[in-house]
Image (cartoon, rainbow, N blue to C red; front, side, top):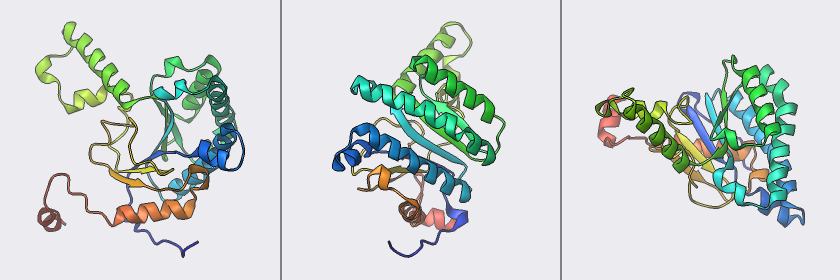
Length: 249
C-alpha cells in the first residue's frame, strides 16, 4: 500500500455519500454466495464510519437498499433484511459511544416488521446524539423521493395549505425523505460502475463524483483517504468562474 495520505481538515466535505457496490461480485470471486459479500461489506461500513468520525465529517450517507433491490432473489432480500437487524443490534452501543445519530431515508413503511421495529428503536435511541449523522437509505429511490414530494405538496396546494407561488427549493426540500440532510458534497462509488443509480438525486446537484474499481469489501481506510485527497484537489465553483472563486478566497 502507498504511503499515508495527508488531508487538510479545513477542506474536507461536510456530507459524504457512498454507493457501496461490489459485495456480490467480491463473494463470487471467492466462490461464495452473494450474502457472504454483504456480511463482509458490513465490516467495511464499520471502518469507514470510524474513519469519518475521526475526520469529523458531519454527514455520511450510505446507499443500503434501493427500491429496485426488491427485484433480487427472495433469499438475498431476506438475508439483507436479517443482516440489517443483526448489524443494528450489534452496533447500537458503538453508535452511542461515538455520539453518532442514525438517520434513515426512504419509504420505510414497506420494510418487514422485524426490520422496521429494530430500525425505529435504534433511531429513537440515537436521536439525541450530536456527533456525525449516519444516514442509511432503505427502500430508497431518488425518483420515488421526488414523486412522493410532488404528491404531498400537490395535496397541500389542493387543501390551500401551500400557495403554488410559494413553492420554492426550500419548500421542495422540506418534503423530501432526505429533508434533514444538507446537499451532498462528495459521492463515492466503489465497484467500477460509473453512475449514480438513482441515489439522492436532489441532493447530488453539485456533488463531486468519485469512482473506483475497488469492490466494497476491499475498500479500506487508505482508499477512503485517497478519495478524499482527490476531492481536496478539486475546485467547486457552483456556476461561478475560477477568477470569482479566487477573488472571494
